[in-house]
Image (cartoon, rainbow, N blue to C red; front, top):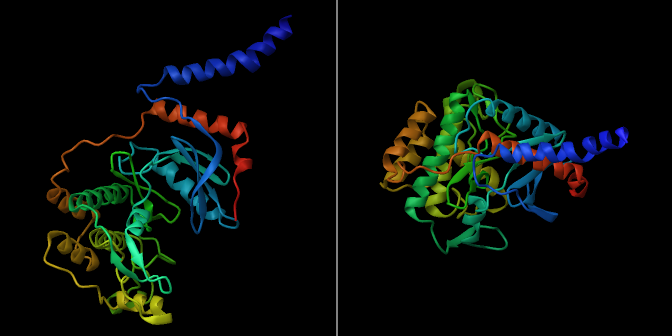
Length: 333
């Protein structure tokens, strides 16, 4: 009888008590996330696949042979989680060897939102026209929020190194959070590669670094934010409405390197774009402050990050999903 009681406590009562303690520690009214019957593929990137697991949790799984990117992202989240998280940074919950569990953002990403409004030439993918532009006030808000996220990283001596609309995720209140930290580097690190038109190879001004992306830092981050601002206000990326034939990619790369940028107006956001493209801000914090001064909604308080008890609950849910075999139901390629 004593052995039976001990087994009952070990396998039934103790797990139930642990879960009760997690729930009791909650300081919000959030409910336990409802699991999906099967993982739902949300995106397929160059380094990983993202699956929705519940109405609160997604998992990012490494692509074959790309585990080093997941490892770098896990390392970055370990650093980010050591301080109160910016409200404009995606919330991390749990890791396994080749996966990262993160919060689900119901509004999708800005890259897809922009793409959905574009009419393209099917043979070249050149943007012929944009059916609907995003509201100017929303664009300014998103510019301010992504700059605030980058400025927060800057305070930690980090540069995101992959700021673009596809990595800016929307909440149900249309606020953005910056995601994808697998390319994040310490400020001053040499960058082997970046993604045009959200980056540029250095020209003659780079001296011995000419023809490289240089070092991670204020220059690279503000350039990316400038191109994001251009994309948000035009509905397409720089040069995405042009087509120069089979060599379009190298020609675009060369124009950026030579600082032959698309034309701009005298609107306030275009002044910021010009400043970002020409490296006029001494820090991302300075850029963030400039944008905050222009955005009439900057005083509004957005929903803050999850509390410690919320995160414990989500982590517990992730662990339960793993025990139920969710990782075995993920495919990779």
